[in-house]
Length: 53
Image (cartoon, rainbow, N blue to C red):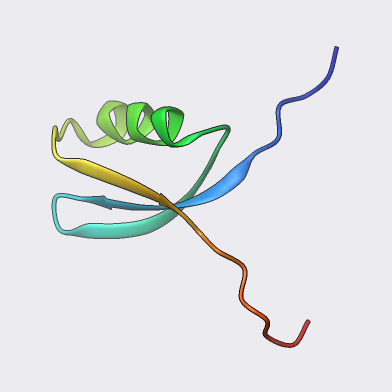
């Protein structure tokens, strides 16, 4: 059995903004609803930029 890959998402919810790891945007939103109880939540995938490693 393989482990699902977690990806970073930028969560915006009730004036908060934070980074969460989830298998997909739907999972990130469901987790944020569970944690905060808010209904207006967005989850955008973080894009890696070409910065120095």
